Length: 402
Image (cartoon, rainbow, N blue to C red):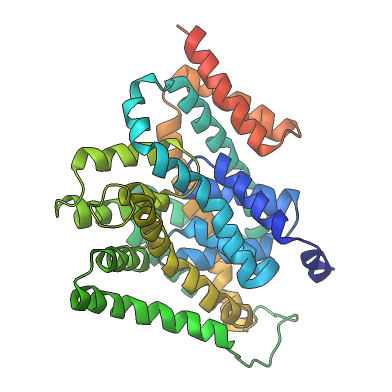
């Protein structure tokens, strides 16, 4: 049934679905997880809750932009490598194009952008993430052990927030799941296991490590500016754990401290990236406009964008086919029961900080959040339209609320 349904999904549907999300997914990676779940699990039913949470858990282990990798995984689940590529293109290019062409303009118009509009966008993000947490908790936390793991993860990450602690919580929770669920019968588990790595998956993993070590050598050997940029962005995309916000200090150290990008320009792009939908890694397309090079600036911008995302694409293509087999093993299933519960705790911690702390400051914020709650929980309005309604509503409240 599911395979038949997946076969009926066209490439155009995949691209357009992710493209619409790329135009309307405000709020950063945690919010993107909520957007994806609403569209692909609840509305379109392209995959079930368990498969989705498995993708979220796996992508939290991988370096790079976790939400983009979840999108790539969904695309791969539906239509293989083509689906993964279409999902990435659809979700990434709206924000990349905006940052490429209008990043500096957004800085100049910063004082003209209504604060109320941003309030409305933050309000819709609060409710979307809340929906995701409630829905995923219902399907994942089915015993008191899961609730305990989720609660411990939440408390640890609220008081000691860091990408390293996130990773350690997932590892420790996997170990707890392995031990605690040891005696639980897994009647639906295949006892025989044979790992078959597809040639394309092997090539993807090989290319990931090959480029990671080869590009720095090539840039030195040929003394090429464009190879140097490719090497820098590929390395950053390969070694960043914790998502988009973690990549910013590395980009700053790589390009601002070295004098390649002026600090004011860097901050302008960062502000623009915060104000638009889509993945924060598209900030690379903004930076590419300002690198001095003999090539066209838009070409350089696309090179930067391509190489910062390339590691994520290679890892997803290389690991997912293996993962489809690995997750059939009893040991892996028990470990991921703990890991999935920890992911819920990770989402709750991120819901508190930064989402709630940055979105609930004044009475107008509370009013907008209540409106967003009513719109998303009690109407059948499409998500993209809800984003538009709340942004306009926030702008309207800012005009008349004094």
